[in-house]
Amino acid sequence: MTFRVYQRGALVGTTTVVITRESDGWRLQGDGELKGDFQLTMPQLDIRYDEAWSPRIMTMELVAKDDRAVVHVAFGLSDGTTRTDVVRPDNATWGSNKVSADAIPLPDLVFGAYEALAARLASATPGQELRAFIAPRFEAVMSADGVVDEDVPTTAGTLATKRWRVTLRRPEGPSPMEIWVAGGRMVRLDVPREGLSVVRQDVIWGRGQVQ
Image 1 (spheres, helix red, strand yellow):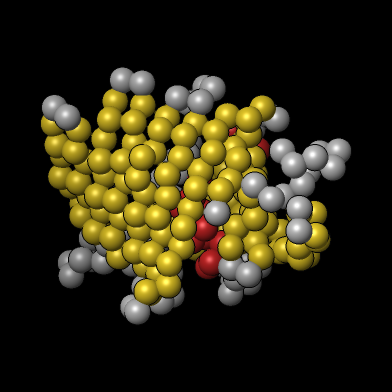
Image 2 (cartoon, rainbow, N blue to C red):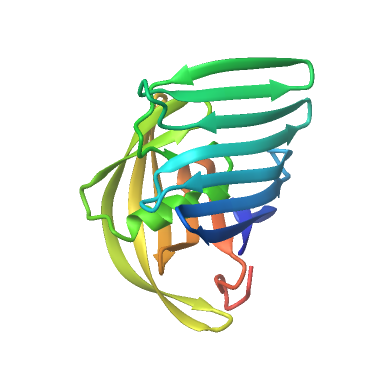
């Protein structure tokens, strides 16, 4: 599935996600590129989850204008920590974080990872609290504030979705978001704080045109 990324209405990038059902859980793979203010390329995203969409292993590669890093995270170690390795061309760091076993990896600007949030919201209830790991830095609480039914126009016809309001409680302040979910998959994600919209490529919005 391909998504287009907009910032304040201007197209600034794309991200592609493939989800595979495996014998012991799920595998999410993808890539992406952001231009404009971001200038960020993600050649690789690979996250493995168990049956309940709790993470086990994550690898991602990020390339910025003056930086390149491969981040590898192993979740749910026996001592209750998460092992995080960050490898750059000229150095490498190894560390650990206290991260809940069911925390959803949501690295900044890695929008394909929000497919796991969509999967978890498929069985969530308003008022429920989830945990997110803003890899590789910190864990944060995410509250599921409310949900409404909303029909979304697509090139194949109208799609029935659940539009969730969620709030990610970051150290620098709360970040409210909206995420549209259909069949456990993400259809659209809005992050007003950053002026960002991540929209599935078949969704029609704005004067009946595919954006």
